[in-house]
Image (cartoon, one colour):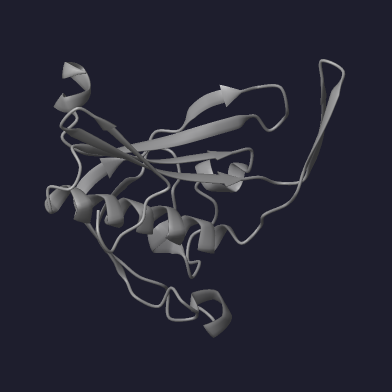
Length: 162
């Protein structure tokens, strides 16, 4: 997959699978089965949303070039600001990942986005296909729970054959 990096690439015979992974947390101290887990606050959800959708565009490019059969962009988070719609009119409105939203087309920052926010992320994203976002429960050990979003890109029939 020359020129493009992905978080994880798997080859199974002649088929290639690609994974892009995001793990975004909000502050939490979790005690479970005599273990304590301290999670930091990643914040900057606007940048996290952009970066996740940039992963989708990367996978679409690889699929279009025939460099992979199927890829997944996956986000795991306990930050409900990713799966809830939130308020309208924000500078990252185009990149919102709330449950039930359909993502497609050209997505760009709002006019009021600051230089610090968009530095290195100035280019609008072009999503080629339509993706319906569906967050799923991962773990309810904490409140809010962990949920994940997985977007499949490419030839998903390859998975049925595997």
